[in-house]
Length: 337
Image (cartoon, rainbow, N blue to C red; front, side, top):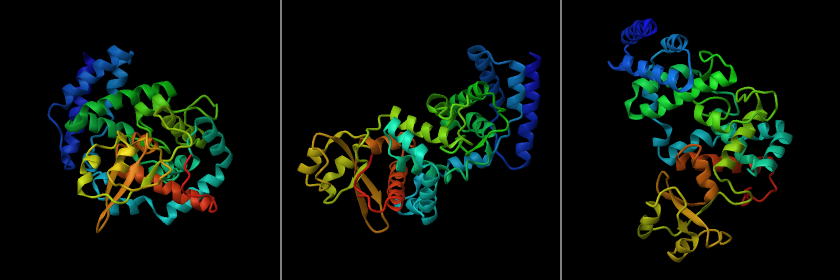
């Protein structure tokens, strides 16, 4: 009981400080935090006082909620693409590939995921590890778990996973920094993905996604493999001949659910090498003056499991192609592992 009173007092102090800086707070945050502590003690055997003290050190940050309300994926494609398809990021990807060539070769052979895709993911997420985020993950997840009702349940789950992760990996929970949404390391894994898919590829006894390129690269490959990446299959191909009568295909969503043969019979033209019995999606992207269309295949959908956005997946794919063309200029760009 004493620890609960301590938690309430410290949270009140934190909330008063937040109000003084212009931050907004929810009046019911104290009971939410108290219930969360109860859950962690009951389910996972956390020490009540230690956890209460830890959460009391978390800072509520209105800037995190503001960032959540203006995601980059809300931009049209012609504004989203230039964020990631830059000369600096392409050149950086080629350099990262050169520096990790043997590692990428081994991981790619083991997991079946193309090296350019692995490089592009890390390039899109953190510019090859140069920007892994400056927000304390404890602050980010606590703010979103208790101050962002729209997705509070999800982020309470991620806060739970984060606390379990730090206990398993013996990491100080107050020292870890990441994105405003709590993503961590060079590949920006959220806590649940970290616990489920991160790999100790360098064999040092820790899954270190900040400092170990081996762990970071293999973890991305493992994530893709576990989500159904198919070795040697293409990712996406441009489509022509799309008109208003094909709206139903666009509206079918990002998961491949349309037979390639049906798309062709409807008059949509694309790479004839794509097998007719394969399932696909029809992707519509907003260019500045017109619509741009692509056929998304299984491996494109797998990329969207990393970030549930066609814009994100297309940025990763196109960056990977640019990097591969620079790395292997004589290689046909129509081939994707």
